[in-house]
Image (cartoon, rainbow, N blue to C red):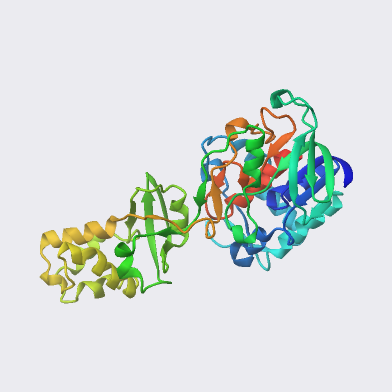
Length: 406
């Protein structure tokens, strides 16, 4: 087995890992990037429908979820969305803003991957792909990690690499079909570093069959709605699927939902439902035709069947409803309460919520407070962004922060 000595070993050649490698290499550090995948940065490649939603102009700490909500302030302030945009412009990569500050490549996400690889190559980074990490050991014989020297030996099937800094950038559990593993959490556990509870984030929600029967025939239909849970609300599209609900509003709220929680949906966020219903209460038009002026007709039919019919509110001409019946309709339009039973799981989740406990890391450097030389960056850390480019910005910012000091 070949013996190598480097300054920095980075496990995980995704967004955060490559950014860290670039910055460390530019400082003259001898860096090796290890990744088990055969293809480089598959998560970047598939993101944003193949165009990579690489950041969000408005990225701030309030767009991130963590048990330690102030942790991400420092890194986000020192490497901003504008800093990453400048890197794209240096490489002539064209981009556009889609909505709400979300930035995408004009062409392919492959341009981002090639840009990062070229920057790594220019910084002298050594690539080990595909290469499986078999074990990690502290070089010191002292088992008390709080006083360890911070030097590590990383053993793969081909090499034994000694380094003074070890960076874990292995990502989370989301999208296992492209290679996600629990390796980063296992490394944290090995060194006695706490990992918070893990669950799928930015993911579709599923429902009991009996609760969703009326909607099973409208997959692909979407509704502009405001969805809230536990005091948090998002207004974007809600998409009906074969198994439940997805779309931007649902993906966003899924990161706040817990089993047993209700979702509250305002189906007419742009309208005053009470005023709208009152304007039609003397009409001979039936309720479904009135609502179809504001919502997709197939959804309206399913919703009336699932929500109003059990309340003994059949579809009939508006003029035939009594005042209290109209109030019930208004109430349901403004506050439709639904109870998910679960999520679509890690296979469909865009991110992993939870991770390496940020109370045990330096917010300035991403280094463990108790194991000198050990760093955690990117998705493996308990920092999860909202939908819309925020998670990539965390990867760039946390990778940059660690890259300045490893």
